[in-house]
Image 1: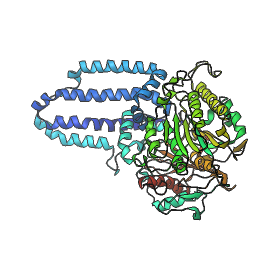
Image 2: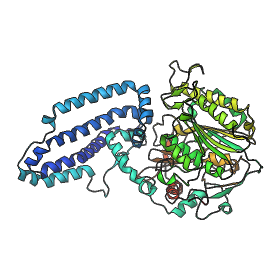
Image 3: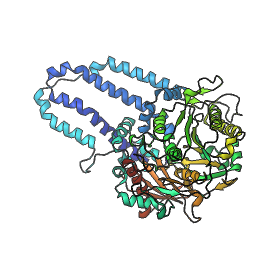
Amino acid sequence: MQTPDYWMIFPIGLRMDLILLSYISFLPTLLLCVLPDEYLQKIRRFFAFYFIAFLFLMLFIELASHDFIKEYDTRPNKLFIDYLIYPREVMGTLVKSYLGSMVFSFFFLALALIYSIKKAGVLFYPKFTMYRTKLMLFPLVAFLLFFGARSSLVSKRPINASNAIFSTDQLTNNLGLNSLYTVGFALYSIKNEGDAAKMYGKMDANEAISRVKKYMNVPEADFTNPDLPLMHVQKSDSTIARPYNVVIFLQESLGAEYVGSLGGLPLTPEFDKLTKEGLLFTNLYATGTRSVRGIEAVITGFLPSPSESVVKLSNSQTAFYTLAQNLKEKGYQTSFIYGGMANFDNMAAFFNGNGFSDIIDESDYKNDKTAFKGTWGYSDEDLAVKANTYFKSKGNKPFFSLMFSTSNHEPFEFPDGRIELYDKQKNTVHNAMKYADFSIGKFFEMAKKESYFKNTIFLVIADHNTRTYGKNLVPINKFHIPALLIGPNVPKGVDYTKLCSQIDIAPTVLNFIGMDVQNPMPGRNLMKLPANTTGRAIMQFHNNNAFRVGNQVVILQPNKEPVQFEMKNDTVLTPVKVNSEMAKDALAHVTTASYLYKERKYRMKGQK
């Protein structure tokens, strides 16, 4: 166990189970106490259906919890709900990776369902009692259920998931909960999306923005629009008549632990060779644990928040800042190139509404008889070939493109004969990472033979790591990711070793394109930071938000006071006294994200 207080799991679990049972029991108890027996006789089948449905639901979610915890290091939450929206991809992954668990679960559920239906009359039909007795007992029973659901008569608020937090270990805190409760609480909490004040505390928007600005390293004179508080001019070292193309190759789940040049496993020989041709960021941290959060950081530069990624939120589907929209207004051709279906996680709608002119996805590969198609789409190798062909067709007009890989996503499918396997079994995360690296190498091998190569800034960067788990409230080591910049005027064979965030990479890319631009991105242009500036990173892990400056990290949790740790390394965090100013800065970044989104103030000038 990660905590000496592990014994608290049981009383917390019992308390949470009673809360859930109280909520479930309220409707049938009300009917039993208020309705006369002749009416209960008519609806007795309803009781059987009601209880069997909830028992089936509880069993289903608890049986699914083992594999979900194994994958995400937490009980089922909003991620569980999100993935139910995409049954084809998710079912394909489950069949190929968790077939044994699925067979056992469905067999057990079927037996439970058959038994419950056969014994429904004994187990679930109401027992009749004198009507007067029931009415007399109703106030007492209602009070007990009310007390059970709130689990407190002292607190102004009902007990919720945050009351299960007693340890600095994320998973330990989740063990006392039950999975139907965590899924239900996630559904209930959707109403709080985007509202940092309800989760972490209030802060005036002006103060929050002021605190965010002090981390941006932008002179006050360069801020250009009071109505768009973070809009500023980013000046290039030198301007050129024909600005450089930008190609971002976003890598699915390529954590630093899989990258040889970052001290990880020897799975990336092609990427490691390319580091000699560009600028490698060795101390970079992702903002989240999902692809849409990585897209949000890399393409929009937006701050992570307790809300869902802006890729999926309604207010950001049009007139929301992206690199594509910015460069499109400068005359660039813009595109998104993907091997899977672009409607996954709402990507196509978000991109289409925010500056991406061409969207190339799975449907555009169907005529290629040699292409390899897996559960999540066509292989990274096919993506590389498609992208290279597309870029060759662009002529002399500058272009911006986002390429997004799929092969290193579970169930880890890729074509035979491309790599020397790292693991004996083919479809493993290690082999998939090695194949993804092979595809990176193939893409650059093709690109170097084309005329567009010498006029292009390339960024290879991960969206997030694979499984994100650990003993801390935010497992910071699992947010460490690679990024590599290659192109004209980009330093060659150089490592950028200072701590930085995924939101810093987009403004850093703009530093090299050869023209001045205006943008509202709060990330730092890392090429212009004074040498004595302390590095900073921001990480969102479920509902916990980590704000790291140097070796100090403040963690915000819903309905809790901030906590602070001193980092000995990525995995060893020692509790220290909270620095109130740093805690305010952490809250300011989350508050600013909510404010800019709600008030639609994260956009290009002139957009509505």
